[in-house]
Length: 171
Image (cartoon, rainbow, N blue to C red; front, side):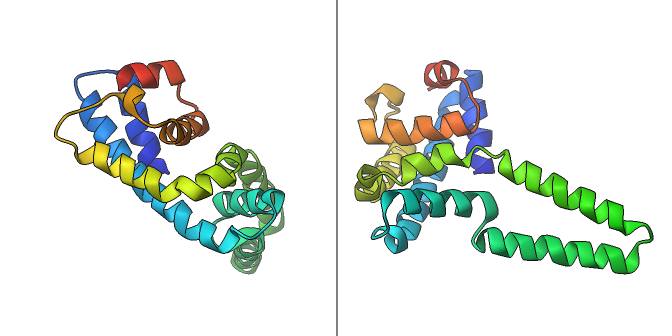
């Protein structure tokens, strides 16, 4: 996601490298859509709200989920207590700061889009379209994408906190 954010920011700058940045972004997003498609195969039979929550947790805490992240934080705090004097307050500060940072991530924006039945049905097609646009001989701007593809891209642009107008203009 960081790589996609980098290229999206370059597109929004609307300079002489915008086309190259757009193509790179489309390729990275195609890989991301394939990844989502793969993960969604395990979640496709869950209720919509549970599917959204699972996706949000995965985006926020990683593949091990909240429990796995809590284990990592607890192990880190235990190591601090063992090897650093006055680490009790430091480990508690780290624990609170990490929890706050993770909770402040805006992953619900992406989870809501990805959890929709329409995205689940079209994720692979979106990935193919993005890849085709990345490698296409003729460059086509953002307005030539399918509606599903535009929705996916703009959802991520919102997540990256990039101005939609600047992004579309940069493509």
